[in-house]
Length: 127
Image 1 (cartoon, rainbow, N blue to C red):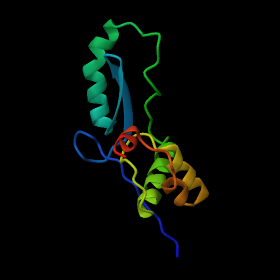
Image 2: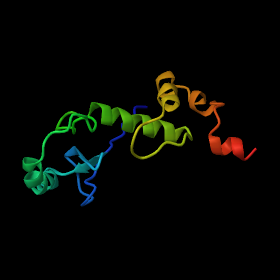
Image 3: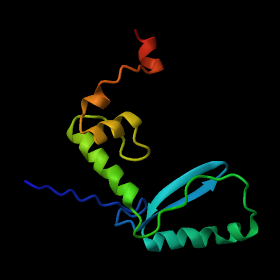
């Protein structure tokens, strides 16, 4: 039986459908926010006076924001997250997916992610 999962990304401000991810930086920290086209425009307009007076920094604050129609990596991440959750593997709702989880997904074997013997510093201290 075929099954299709649909993942919908929502505007982090309104909770409605998001059209793009906008990346920006402030005080040395890179941020990403999922926004509708309307809210993305509002953010860009609000930053425009500061942007036009600023100079470009020599270091990158991360990847460029996703534009409409370029959601391949995002869709794959959503697919990996759904697979991991269905196999009882803990995975965050946002952000980077751990290497072991991605390996397990690629192998189709949840034990790859669950079988890690690597201990966190906190776990080692509690022994």
